[in-house]
Length: 194
Length: 311
Image (cartoon, rainbow over all chains, first blue to last red; front, side):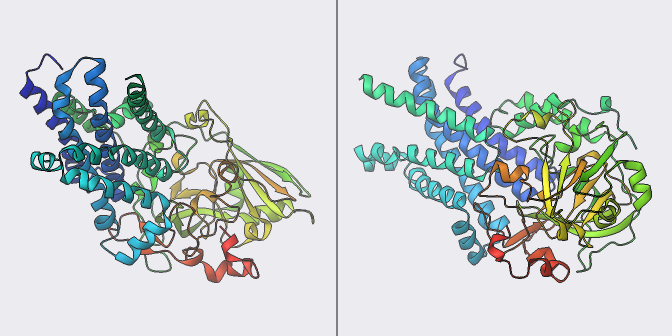
């Protein structure tokens, strides 16, 4: 990747991040979203959001370990895309799945602990996405970094959400959980060795 | 109609493509095109077709779920955890010869060849709703016979209080059984009076034809007032026993899956609500009915029992 010029690299990241969405729309048009399309959309957007979140969290370690500074230029975009997919995921739940039936949604969230945890993660990601513009970075100064450290608890909540939602099928959540654990461990080790 | 294994995208291709297209890893446009070609290949394969059914609606007036959905959206962990991959992996699963051993606390234990069994007890069409514990449902035209007919023939002794169903154990044909998080083979159970209920069916067909492997061929249980996982598939052994048998799911997660597992909108699963469901093919959710709508026939079985404990 590093042999690409800067703009090509960024372009590739944008295309890559949008591909699952395009794919989803194509599959939807071709009626290929399984026989339970709403569940499939929920699963896919959720997984995409998590993968993008992990990619955003990988930028710092990769830039250090591989001496690959350029990757830091796409970190923010990856984070914002993660939120966009989380937003689709949430919208699928309240709109496509529950048709804005607030009583059912409230019951759903309260009776399903995994939904509550996912909702909390979404609530954390929301202000992070809003404050991701240059203007907000300037306005918040030092506090911007403090605020954006909330990405870590949000990521942990997302893993709990995914593990809990999986019906006894923990392979995939465990893999993502392992990746997150590594990414967090790297940060702890680095902090301690400083 | 038979599908030759060679006509189907190989398992590894299929699964890796699936992982590939759903992940953010699918970033390169060229790869996207490759994926599309692969998919076109799948749609050319010969598909099984339904036979004739007597009815097109259940007794509540709801239409049958399409044959395609019934035969391509399956929970059958012996093959894979992915519902849409079961039908692909189950192609070529050997359902003959097949024997079913009926024994335990009975006067006359017997081992049946499955074809003799079907010939002997016949095929009635039963349109039943199937409610999965995951929150989706179908309306399926089964072919089969009441389990009671078989049980009467082997004559349970006075000690027999429960029936235990054991599914096939065959790691060669069922890759999902290599997954050691479950205690294979699949085991399920019913109380004797539940097993003798007129609704409880041993099914060997659907949509007017023999069961396909993904639906639990050649012989499976159908207990329509309970969550779908109670309806054990590809059964090789039926035993009458004295004590409540522990099912695979009870052993895997006793806090989440109980023995009775009666459909009940008022008792949430520990991790999700059971008050609504999505009928496959419908856009909107619908309310889940107590006993899946079969309360008139079966609520008598549970008189005096705490409904909260009937999960």
